[in-house]
Length: 195
Image (tube, rainbow, N blue to C red; front, side, top):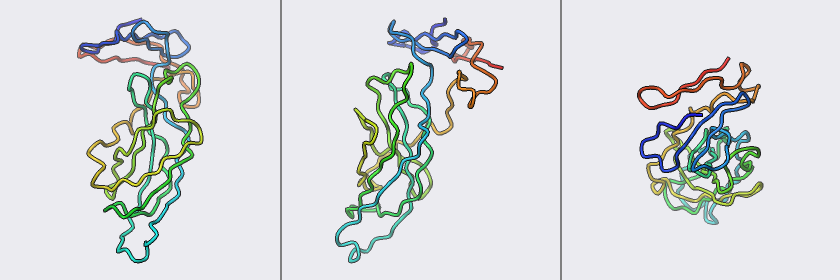
């Protein structure tokens, strides 16, 4: 067991490996799996066009959606596979709405998701995924209606699209096995190895 090298860590984070899967503990809570997994299902969508759609001078753009899991401590994981392209006009407030569904609930097992959330991101014309919404109390089968114009999305972009969790007992992702070593490096990050 080692203490996390986090400056001013209010949680007293500790990490450990035991041959099963890497674990993390905060504020002397129970041990949980280290890392936040990526959702395995892509979101689906249904476009609701404004009633006066034909009369409006709209220029449909093509968008995609992804979502991520966020654990009880605010740690965000990698994104889901992207949705198929959807045509809509979010350039101005034209009353377009896209209903997003088929998002899988948080994974079961020894993860810290009692109060976890789901974050939804939408791609723009530049292909960058920008934050749309954070859903609390999400359950399987829930949907979200996105009608936010592009100019109201803000600047929060998806940061975790290249993040991967530590090697664990999922042999399809980590055929060489779980994390077998873990140590604090001089410039305050954890390094580990497997296989």
